[in-house]
Structures are given as structure tokens and as C-alpha cells.
Image (cartoon, rainbow, N blue to C red; front, top):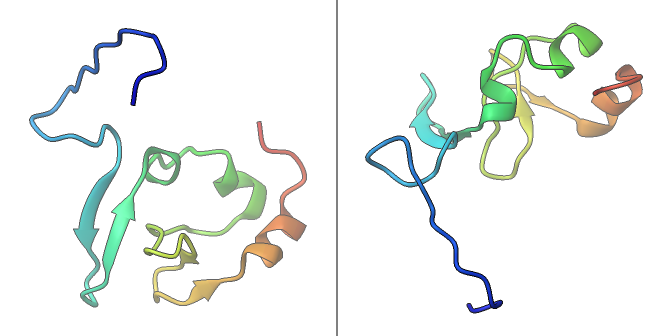
Length: 82
């Protein structure tokens, strides 16, 4: 792809992906860990009072029991996320 700009991509680790990392849960599910969900002080935690786990490949939220949390239910609980 060429959009007319020269860029340099820097990675802080020996692997590409930045803050996104793939791992497996205790139940063997493959999950993508992303920076927006990894930090324990992220804005969704206090707004929803729910303990979050990594997202699955469909980008759905799972709780510790790996039970699917419905996104619409979360939207009703969040007033403001900055």
C-alpha cells in the first residue's frame, strides 16, 4: 500500500503486535489480550462493576467462568466512558 507517506514502525518487543497478545485460558480457549482490557484500572471496570476477562475471537467479553457477557447489557450499565 502506498499513500504517499514514508513511515517507520517501531516495536518494543521481539514480536509484532504492540499491546495485543494471544494466549489460552485455563479452559483452553484462544484469546486475544488487548491493552484496552489488560489494565486493571481501565474505564469500563468501575463503570460496570464487572470483573473482565480477555475477549474471545468474536470480540465478546467473558467473565471468569468464561460465561459470555452480552454487549447490550454492558451498554446499559455504562453512563460515561472517557
